Length: 184
Image (tube, rainbow, N blue to C red; front, top):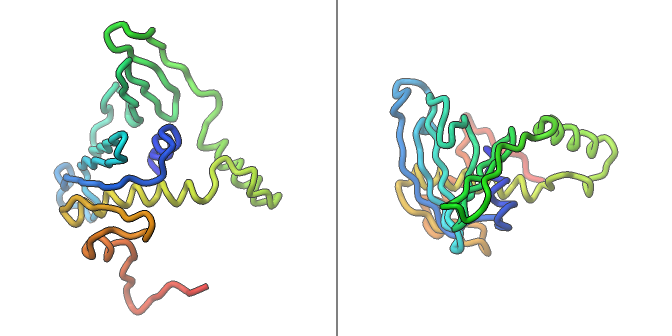
């Protein structure tokens, strides 16, 4: 979801310990979206921080890219997106690496892998198993929940719940007209 999987995979993590977020509907205040068009969420993984920023309506963001992520370390910054990656050195500590373009279209290759695994009943050959997808979706929703509660939310990974009820109420949707998900 939204390239968060790159960060979780690259840093060897699944979920943060806490998240806080701020934002609003500034670019399109009168449309029907319930998600803010501008938001910053800060995810605390204890040994690193992930900062999610989005602003709908702005073509190019940081690093002159329409989307992507940056790993910033003491020697430089690795910037990557679905098109490729490059390295920007910090004060000549390392060599700059010009843009390295991806070969093929990653999303197409990922979908092809998924469909082949379904067709051949080979889940062990998935590029990303369902746990990865679940964790990425959870991390994305944690930012939305922090925004909607207006609080820094803390995650209890053992219980698979937040530590406050206002946040936990947003983990499951409220359906209209008596609809309920079937129980399996």
